[in-house]
Length: 102
Image (tube, rainbow, N blue to C red):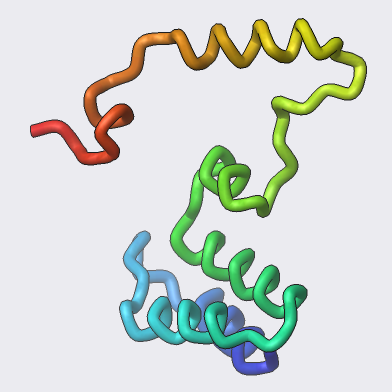
């Protein structure tokens, strides 16, 4: 875990105009996958997400940020209607297939 903190500090010192060192990211992924405990994995994932400037939506997808969709004051029927509306909205070809359109 201390290795992750050193790499995070190194990253803060170096600003490559938005570019990220492949070796640094590789080491962070290896540390994430081999972290012995859940808190260590979560911290490694948070650092990696900040290094690659992950969007809040992507952070939400991987569990780093709480979902805005859950509202304890919302009824089940309202939540279901909201779900149906979001699922029935048109999507671009890239979103449907998961591949960028050419």
